[in-house]
Image 1 (tube, one colour):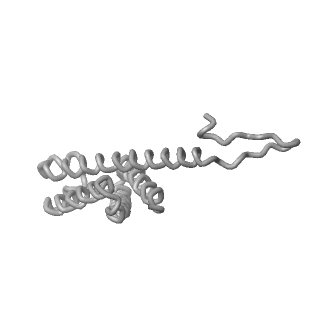
Image 2: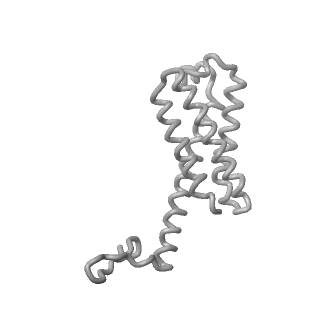
Image 3: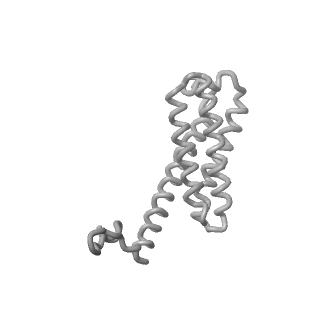
Length: 151
């Protein structure tokens, strides 16, 4: 546990913390990096699954499952799904090369915006379960964006 938490050295009557060592700093950076990749993979899998369901399901089933497609043309639902799919792939694009990091940042912004729009839509329809889900997805996309801002 000494690698994760700084040690406390007592000097006189007051306890002071030592600055983290280089090993501790690298370990924290690795843990943060791993957590961000896990979050990015989870977001990607979620949105790929959602896009696949909307791209392949008939419109009557989408109305039963989601509700909102009843007043929207099926082509619009498919277009939104295609955007979701491209953003989901973009959020893990740096797995190929870090040159695609701007694509990942753009995808995180796009997912946050899309889920923000969906949040407003579901709140307007008083679908609080879907609204909560979209709030969590927006928070995850923003966490990826903030966590990767130094890359």
